[in-house]
Image (cartoon, rainbow, N blue to C red; front, top):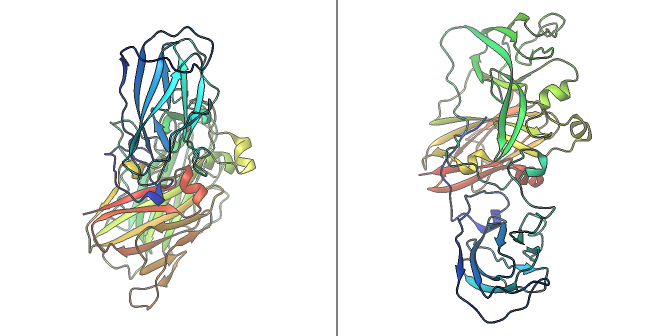
Length: 442
């Protein structure tokens, strides 16, 4: 549900809305007396100059709020740390030229007497979040300020970087045990967890994580699941990996109760499990889902295997459960892999050039399709919903694994060279909402 790692740089400029990097820090300092400059409001000039270094990178200004003493003259030293162009326009009419990657310029913002808004004027950049606020020590905060302390949807910034100590969820696929009987206790637990930097929600979980544990076995294996409800409302569970009448094993149980769910896996694939209690939309939307891998009998060995479960968050208030009205309106705030916004953009998955890598993907929904794609590669193996659609000996290749909610499969790829390979849901609005990450190939 969470995981940290080091920031990355030097990624292709055209992917700025797909990749997230840790933004450059800023130093503000008071300077010496300067020549008179225009004021932004009626204020007595102090005769002092405040100089602030601002970096433009990954569709953000850092910092995105500048506070100066009222009456100070403000000088902004703007550096473009992207490969794509950016500028800075102030609501006062002052602006910089469009800067190429690596360029720096200076903007004299004049004497600051009140709040001044700024933005990048290149098409779509302001709408994507490239906004900046200049305010004084006594001015009220602007309505659009990106406050990351509240934790609710108003604070959500899909381009924000997690804290330095963040640890990403381990995406490595589990190894199936040699035994034919798999026993697991699933405990329903309500936990307050971070789903994006500064954004906390009350999550309904299986065993405390979103998604729940990944199970793995073979065709013919038996799974015996003990469900214990440690939550505050009734819950149940539905395993798509088994076929049986749902009346008893999928019934809802009250807090403090338990049941045993036993099924035999007769078909291969990556299968969803989820809470079976109505409204299922609300229970799944709050985090109650997971994956079961049943290996195809002819599954070849690979060098690395990963599991990515795509899902959505419909953010409620800070620390609260998700917003059911948003779920019913199909208005997700975030789309994620393995329970956290863009976590693998900050903590990339690893591989080596020439290795064969298998990526299992499950779309847990509850509402959005997935279009899994790895930038810079082509899939030579595609397995979807119980059948191979492409094998390495076939002359063709594939670029996407498209999945409806509850569907799953895997792709295999060999990375041609060292580098950073972004992966996304190619529904780009969802990539921008957080359904993105990186493979770091050495």
